[in-house]
Length: 303
Image (cartoon, rainbow, N blue to C red; front, side, top):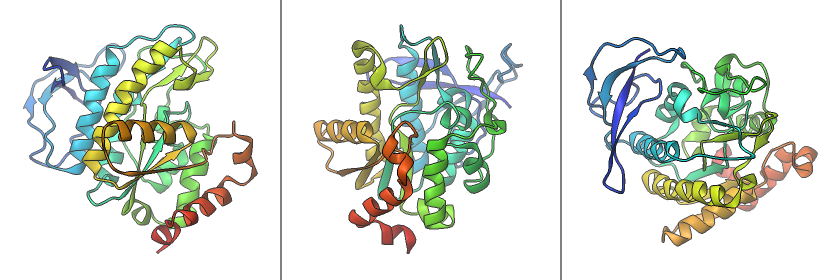
């Protein structure tokens, strides 16, 4: 499937020409200015450039996607040293499925944003969907699309997209909980959307997953500064009134970034479903249900 070239105007008033990730034309008619060219595929198997497109800001989904594209452009100019050996960005190679997720579920009028930290190796890294455990993405969220591959892959962390057979515990717990609570995706997404603060996944030489807080301080601060800026734009674009950090780090980053930007939204948190967290292995669903009831949200999601 063809992909195109985006021309983005960055805040520094610099124009950046960048290859668009593979994706279908799912944005609403009038949101994309398109010019056809004919090109082949690149050696990595990813579609070659064929269109020039600019995403306008006439819908909530397109405004959200534009923020992500601008963040991608900034992150592409960053480099990460040891202990990082591999860096994947699913908003590049899994843009097709990610755009399907955004176009389907990012709507005006949603009041709650669940905010994760960054992709897991068998979740969003494979599917382009936050907490994107493959079975939940395919069977409950009904996301479809093509997933490419990053240019440099760890041999133990290959990207197989929606064909990935390994389940990610965090994603299975997260989406499984809301499937049981809400029944149908519509009942969840009429009030809520899910997003990650950072779109990048980091690995060391052995393939071990590294979270942003585990990066060297200078790299971490530069990365999260960009991601904080993008979060403020996302919250403004979505118009949500409540941000729920999934895990302490996401909650703290959101609270700080939004306060410093003068964006007046409520920030709360729920426990992260990661199996690294011993408490999450002792009944995460019950803990989160109790927290949502405390926040006054349980009836909203079950009504």
